[in-house]
Length: 90
Image (cartoon, rainbow, N blue to C red; front, side, top):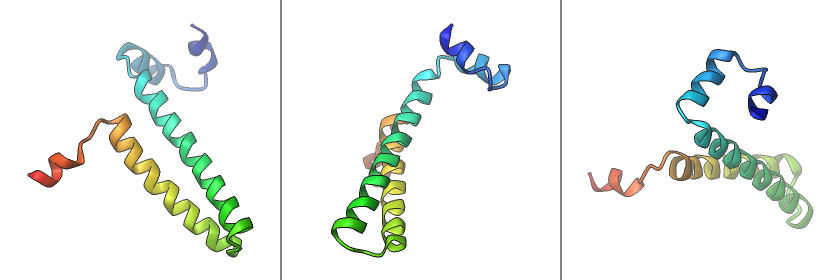
């Protein structure tokens, strides 16, 4: 009930669809992976800029690319339970 009140921003049809079909688990996993990607992005940007002394724009490009790859693989594996070995074996 608390989540339903907190998410009044969403159209009711989308919210009802998520609740009715029990898809909250996927939404939370997806959001958690996105949050870890943001932490990785900011940490790498800080490390590359302050400690490795790479120009901040280059550091940002490297950090963004690594966090995109991290998000892709983690979402594919953890959120959607996709197994890469099945694809390679076929």
